[in-house]
Each structure stands twice: as structure tokens, then as C-alpha cells.
Image (cartoon, rainbow, N blue to C red; front, side, top):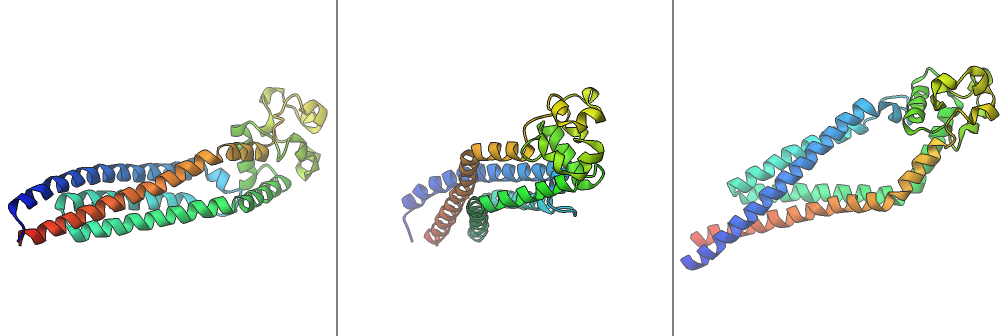
Length: 251
């Protein structure tokens, strides 16, 4: 049996670890709420963008919603386990955090290594959406939404539309127009006249240039969030160990 003075020294450490772990769990819970909100927002507002990749509805928003909901639940579980001071609950919480860390690390590394392949797939998909544009399909609506929101036109620039079947009958889509009132069918069918009335920058060029310019920031944030889980694993394991040792010392 350990002396009372030793136990008195252990209790402040446990209290300190509990405070840190509860604070961490609340932050972890809040990130889950953010992911949940982003998933719902993506499902409501970005469906048009996702439809470019497939004619069917994508599961990406549901993955975010599911991940966010799981993190919210385990964030609350972490707070409960910390307050209860249960070693086995804390170990389960640490295992979950480690799984989240590994999943985020694999996803981040895969995205970085295959970024060129992903870019090529997006390029082929967007180019096909322009070639098959008819003004009524879901992919056509997605193209219109992107061109209006990003204030861009075509793949590389507005002249890409000249090689499409849609251009022969209708000219450049009205979604490329800076001011709809100034765009007539006659102007949209003439590339020289349209140059003054439509956006000149290509959508794919715009998206990839913005993405590449912020790639370092995105990677830094992603890996920062991933390694944030390691702090939680460390705190949960330390607290579990101190609580277990303290229980043995009291016997």
C-alpha cells in the first residue's frame, strides 16, 4: 500500500488531466458539429457541382454528415468517460481517436499523392459536360451554376463553346454573360462580339489555379487537424494510467 502523501500527489495530476481532456473533448465535439453542418450545407447547395461527376446523386455529403455525427457522439462519450474516470472507457476513446487520426492521415496522403490524377479526372469530366451541354440536363444545370457563381466561362476560356453542338444553334450559354440584358442570341453566336459580354476566364483554369495556390494551406490545416487527435490519445491514455495506478495504490 502506498503512503497517503503519494496519493495526494497523484490526485492533482488526475484533476489536471481531466480538465485538459474535457476541454479537448469539447473542441473535438465542436469539430463534429462543423462537419455535420458542412455536410448538410453541401447536400443542399453543392448538389449541382457533384452532379458533374456522375448522373446519380453523390454520397460525399452523407459521408460528411455520418462522420460529423459519429464525432459528435464520441466527443460526448469522451466527456462522459472523463467525468466518470473509467479507465476502460478512456482506452476506448483513445482507440477511436487513433482510428480517426489514421483515417485522416491516409486520406490526406492519398489526396496529395493522387492530386494530378484527380485533376485529370475532373478535367475530363468537365470537358465532357461542356461537349454534351444541352441547357436542360442536370450536368448542364451544374455547368450553368458554376459559370454564374465563379464568373467564368468554358473550360479554358469562352472559345471552348465554339466546338460544341449547342453553340451552332444557340451560341455561348447565357450563364456566361456578365449582364444578361446585354446578351442576345446574335451576340452569343459571334465569338468576337461575345468577348465583350461574357466572362473570359475558363472555369477549370480558375478552379485549379485557386486550388493549387492554396494547396499548402489546405495540406497544413488537414495535417494539423489529424495530429490534433494524437493529443487526445495521449491525454486519454495518461489519465487512464493515472486513474488505474491510483486505484491500485488505494488497495
